[in-house]
Every structure is written in structure tokens, then in C-alpha cells.
Length: 244
Image (spheres, one colour):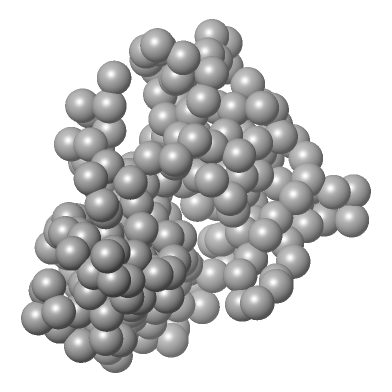
């Protein structure tokens, strides 16, 4: 049995370049059976057959002269979408595996107006998450968050040295040993929902970085945003509805 690097076998299987194959693995799109391939350079049997998760198409929720709002699919970086939607620029970001409402602005005047609303905590941000364990009552977590970067990767912790952050969690459905929750966040720190849920021992399913079990994706979706009198909604993905 001969072995080869995973990305090289994938490149041959899919008829793509080595760098495209690496990118597909890094995004979390590549599986052998039901196991996600994590390390692009890992050596694997050269007869391995991969299964590649398809990325959904970007859907536009709203567009005018000031803003374009999209329903971001999971597995795509916000920066990548910004490049596709030039000259619009990101107003905020969603993590790669988080889907949902993503806003990009088209002019500086509107951008400054919107940033002021974020700074005043005048923006309503509602997410849906599937979390580990059973949450039977609403929970509020009002704990400061400190974010550090290592190897270009952000990692956040509850810390007295951090910035103020408040999250509200409302249980919706309990199924087996997991709960679907509505999350409303104030302030909006890096990885706020992920950090606060881990802090109360209910990490998001699929969020291995913060203690969740392995799943197809991080089960977090930006469902609704209200800003400057406008409301944008990204419907709950099918994978969330079926995840019981």
C-alpha cells in the first residue's frame, strides 16, 4: 500500500490544482466516509476516495446604494466574499463555518454611520446555535472577553482584562443531549457566542476549538440583524432544521 499527501490525491481525484485541493481541506470541506480530513499534508493511502462537501451559492438578501446584505454560506471566509463583491467592504465579519447575515457597505458615509451604531450597541444581532447539553431556562452571560492572536488565529477567553460583552441565550428545542438556542449578543466581541457558551459548559456542536464535539460544521448561524431602521433575516439552514 503506497501513501501520498492528502491534498495531492484530492487534486488528482477532483481535477484541481494542489493549492485548490489544500484550500478545500483547510475549509473543512473534505471527508473520508464521515470523517473530516483535517491535515492537508497528512499522508494517506493513495487509493483513498474523498467526499467533497459542496459550498452553497451566495444569496443576496438586500441591496441598495449604501449596502449589500448576503446570506453567507458556511465554509467561506468573509474576506473572500469581500474580494468577490468589490468595491463593497465588510462592515463586520462572520467566522468561516458560521453562516447567515453578512453586511458589506458601498460608501464611506454610510460605513461611518453604521460603525457608530455598532459602537453604541444599537445593532440587534440574533443567532441560532445547536449546543452541547440541555439548557432548560434562559441564561444571560455578562462577562468580559479577551482575544489573543496566535499564528494568525484568534482565540478568546473570559477574562477580567477583557472588553465588556453580554450574551443572552434562549432555549428553543431540546433533542437527545443537545439544545437549539436563540442567541442575542451585545457588544459583539471576537468569538463572543462561542466563548460565552463554552464558559457555561454548553459549547457549540462542531466547535472543536471551544470544546464542542466534531460535526460537519460549527452549528452557528447569524439569523437576524437590525440596524438603522432596517431588518435583515437569513433563513435557518436546512442542516439546522434537520439536526435532531
